[in-house]
Amino acid sequence: MMTKTQFNKCFIYPLLILFFGSVPATAQDDMQRLIIFYTNDVHGGITEQEADFLNPDFPPILGGGAAAANIIFRARKEAEKRGDIVLVLDAGDIFQGTPLGTKTEGQAIIEYMNRVGYDAATAGNHDFDLGKEVFINLTKTAKFPVLSANLLDRETRKVFSAVKPYTIIERGGLKIGIFGLSTEATENMSFPDNIAGLDFSAEAPAAQKAVDALREKGVDLVIGLVHMGLPYDVQEGYADLKEAQKQNIVKASYLNAMELASMITGIDILFGGHIHRGYQEPWEDPENHTLCFQNYGNGGNLGMTIIKIDKETKSIAGYELPGRDGSLLLLTEDEFWPDPEIAADIKRKQAEVEKGYDEVIGFAEFNITRSGEGTSPMSMLLCDAMLEATQADFAMTNFGGIRAEIKAGPITPRDLFKVMPFGNSLVVMQMTGEFLKQVVESRVAGRHRGVAIGGGRVEYDTSRPDGNRITSFMVGDYPLYPKKVYRVTVTDYLAEGNSGMDLLLQVNEANIARTGILLREAVSQYIQNHSPLRIKNDGRWIKH
Image (cartoon, rainbow, N blue to C red; front, side, top):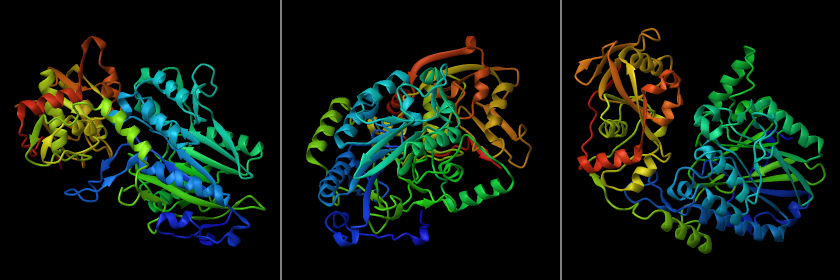
């Protein structure tokens, strides 16, 4: 395979120029064009949505799945004339995150993918959020293979029957092998009941086994479809990788996409996901020359690349990207008009499941923002709502479960679903002050970012040793008493030991009350009780 500096990259704009004769036929006689569309972390985001990140006051409309469908349909039509090959792939986390995805248990999203004509997808960690049976039903509905070479049946140690380790597609004289991987971390990010009987095994051995099997079957091209992300900064990530190799630190599991591309030989192209960080240009492993692509999440973009295949050697000779910015097409409706039939079908299904989602339940006088650490108006809102709903003494939740912000003005159930898409419920645990302090200490140890809290005040000093960083801990108006028993409310997700809260697994079941109250419902009721909201930082979390 040629190196990146040798690749003939062609930035062509607008997109339709690429399809309608941008490259003379004579120049293509010795090349086969493989057009690949790719998505990841769609999380049910096939509906129209406002692009607040472009203009918060007058956001343009993103066409979602219908806009993507129009691009793909037109590409296929032109590809038939030119003799090009078209693939449509997804790297996992397909449905959970919107009312349309969650309330239909993913069926509306899979049905959309069937209509668009996806060729393969891999299993993401959130595809198990509603349980193993829901996931199995999705694979049965899908008219494309769902791939995961490291998703095993715990008893038989064979690949789980609902998925395949790989698939082979033969088109245009090419034999293309595609394998899938799920992040091994799924076992730490899912409720045990949701993945009962499943084992997410080490990624590297499963990947190499799948690649070797595909090569033995004589494929011309190997594509990896993995629910694993490239580092946020690829240069920094690669420097860290080389330093680890220099120190002979070898990982076989809990890998990111860059580590996988570096460790596994025989992968031509890798499509990643999981971290919702997109890259306009692929990252190429300097040694294995694996091209790594990755899109943003939530369905606002469609990834696209054109791989040029030498017809004689059937090897990669270069690649093209569709626009002046690169590989990712932002699906603004003024540029990519939605397919009318797909759009009408999505809106019909959306209307069925979203009745009442735009009713005003309260008002916010200021933007309710979130943060990845410390205190934010959003984390304060959630924790205070948890306390009010359960009458507990103290509340904790994780930052990762807070997925959006709320703008000043009217608040609707749709806004709350964007913030809390996962349907977590509240659990009240009884624990001593000594144990509660130990739990919070674990979240400020090392490089941990802390935890969102309510009902108290915590100060800590990162210059102090782990386990002894908290300098002040108040519950209500009083210092934490080590021997006193407190009622602490958390989400069921944390109660299962997720997000680094494994200490909570030590709480005796007799001291646990599973309320059944949805976090979304608790926050909705709190907003109605206290509207208009005027949330300002009250100094409940202080880092020295």
